Length: 162
Image 1 (cartoon, helix red, strand yellow):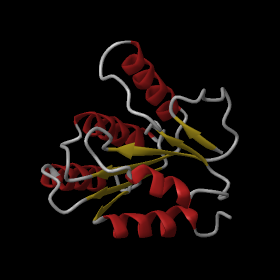
Image 2 (cartoon, one colour):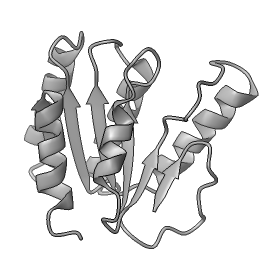
Image 3 (tube, one colour):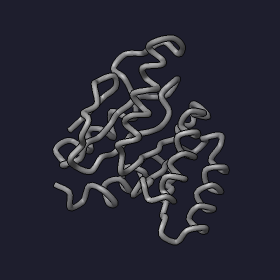
């Protein structure tokens, strides 16, 4: 089931769920390409990228924040893409939260990718390494380049799901 912001999120999600996290403001519409990969695969996948732009403050912005918060609360697998066009401060915040949730067992899998030229790639590498070293049950996969990121999604999630 495909759920794109601002579509209402069902109270109960009965299949594994994936949240497509990453740069939105000032970034290419990369989420659309990832969403296509999940068509017909038996997952619920949340896309926070709206079809149209929205205000960064006020009721639209608040609705977007609430939508993302609710979707992430219902998510089993988090995908993070960090494009070079933005530092992605909100995505970094969500990534930090997801690292904690992965250690607590709330998130089952984290797949993270970054584009060559992403300004905080060093931080991503170190944070990911620290989590992976501190808890052998938590594995966060980190990939450089969009093609490698998509390949990891296919190999680690989609193969055998459909």
